[in-house]
Image 1 (cartoon, rainbow, N blue to C red):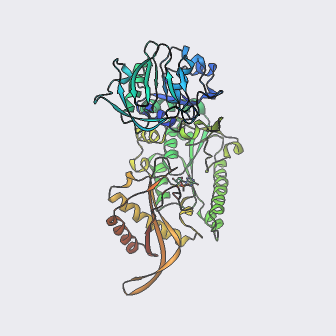
Image 2 (image 1 turned 120 degrees about the vertical axis):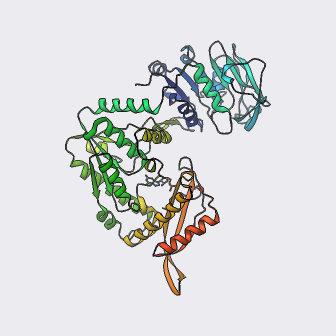
Length: 523
Ligand code: XMP
């Protein structure tokens, strides 16, 4: 490990633990989330954190067998911040008292949602910059509450239902708060993290420049003089991984770009010219559109389509990868959210590793080892790294594009004719969004061509062409989404342009379904 200053977040199963990590990363502090079950004495000694944060969690410390950090954490001599459940566990382990609330059957006062904390007489540096207006809005979400603080602790803030909203043992640098400073609804919460890492002595050494240099050194060490294969999709993650690895090992990297014939207008050319011409990265452009479209011919069931594409993708990738003699490694753009082991509500740690649909199972099958230089990064950090590497903004800010491509935006049978129409309509739509300066406000936008033809009239003639649906959503992670509230003027102008410019479409609709109940893609 090359990061000298590390903060450990012990996860007790809060829904918002990842937000703690994000707040810290924004402060240039390197941190890792680990489920409490994995945090043993030996782990702590090996990890050697400069500070520790206890997350919230759904359990009740009043329940026998509920999650605990090892007692040795309190003897490490490093600052600790406990949040919500983390506060309660700290109080209980250090000799205070926690009472059950409504949820755990204790009948005490629960507190959910917005609350206001007011300061106590004495001050602490954890709260520098707080209480300028005499109180602070915070987000509470607890059933149980601390009824007696542990010896050595003092109260520094109270809310109507949480007399011990902010507590600290100043001598030991232990801090415990009842609310969640990491969430948006605690508007000044970032200050608490800022103060905490400052008083813990972090210098903010987690910068993208430093990360890039570290990552390059680590790739060189891991790969040595061996060869690496990288599957390129044209998306941000694989692009950044490829350019980073290329900076580390030059021509020992070969990229394979599988063109399944389901890409957007000019997309294949853009990817090829960017990597081959601009970056001089050895690139195999596998134009396999005939194979994919041939196998998909006549298929209209969404799951069958996905299965066909997934299988062919692996076959084709493997075929081309086999042409690269002596490759020992496969590069993947795996991100940190894909590898975090989170504490599930059923108790045990649940490993939420996304199976990469593109190359799933391939490393074992081909006897390849993995190079995953982005596995410590969040998506926005990948973008920052991309900028550090000089990738053009048009690549970095791109909306996500699904592996099965336009196949899942073409409900029903896929034909070359429909794909061509869809590509043109999509290009007009995205052009409109860019022209109106909306691209960066939208998580994802695309056109779906519908399997219905409708009657229209253009000029003096009757038309009988396809209908299409425009989709645009806002989201933070693709798990939930809301439709984007375009103005009627924008929608009207876009529909007119599509019908005028794209032969084959005579009707345009706007999809206003959120997720759930819908999904972002149509299939
Ligand atoms: P849904 O349609 O499930 O999509 O709401 C959520 C996000 O995932 C993308 N997506 C995929 N990405 N392979 C991918 O790489 C896939 O098979 C796939 N299916 C959906 C989708 O574009 C959206 O961003």
